[in-house]
Image 1 (cartoon, rainbow, N blue to C red):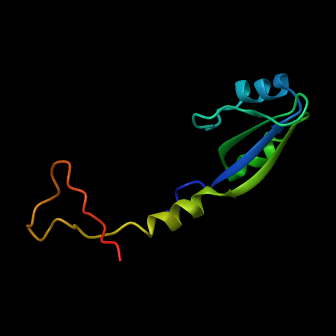
Image 2 (tube, rainbow, N blue to C red):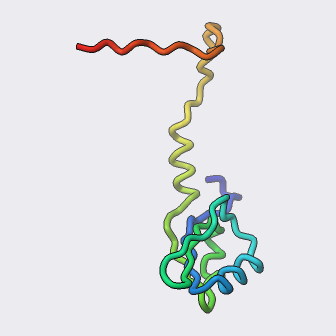
Image 3 (cartoon, rainbow, N blue to C red):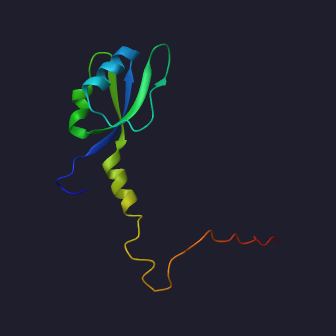
Length: 108
């Protein structure tokens, strides 16, 4: 992770009711992706979000708990190491085109 980049944490936000969650989401700019909250029990709701590590404690408030699920920055760095560095098409053989074809699997 570059020194200038923020450490991003994956968190689970649990609110005791819809109003508490709505209040949090209206006052904070959180990355909640495209998923909405899920009901847990009674009026309690949960939603995952990605927040800067420095903001995790600040998000805690009455009616809302924040649980750190993981370090998203570290997970991203680990996944980035899996990505190849070379150009697999540099040999001049071209690149795949069209739909391709399915090979029949030989059975014993």
